[in-house]
Figure 1 (cartoon, rainbow, N blue to C red):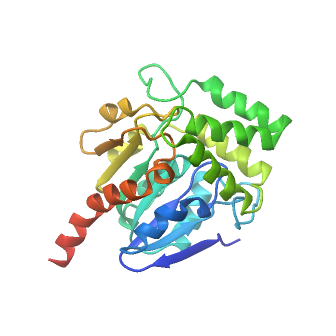
Figure 2: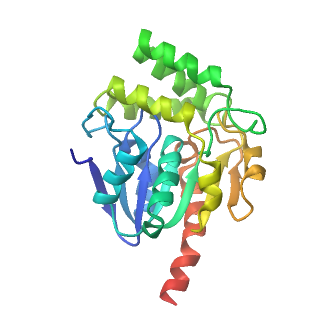
Length: 259
């Protein structure tokens, strides 16, 4: 079943992969800014937005193959949160397809472990898994609050997240469970370190899921910056700044290619 992919803008191809429980409409203002310089491919992951769900749709090998079939032969990839894990997987299996990679409020490992304190405790996601079974709507609201808590413009950000959630079909319950399972179990630290494409990690200093100190733990070839005061959705709270920082990263390669 083909994924729903919206294409807007003009310029080099850029693919945007959203996070857990969201859909491609979440990019909104941020996408409008980038679309002045890039051709954006806004993907609805399986069971999210207007992409239908089929059992196993978020199995990483299946998803990566599906994305490779439907997306440009070579593009810049922006992966937000869960979308970052998916971007790393695609770049690992199809390195020739990923021109540059932007990890936006993303990490190769979302759960803390020995030697990796740069994420959340496993019990946080376990709680979300339990909440999903009891009350999906309440679980989604709690996740929105966690993403914005303590950040600048948190009220406006959570309002925008809620608005966008209401504009698309409710995520399929099995898709939410599968996505949460990816967040809990995936460890792509080795895969990320092996990538050879230019990589940019952009975090918020008030992200409650990924501390900005994680930047120091990433392989040295990865460029990293943080947005002061931003939480887990910097492209919503600081859309113009976020877009400018990503464009500054992406443009030098373009200049060389055309030079």
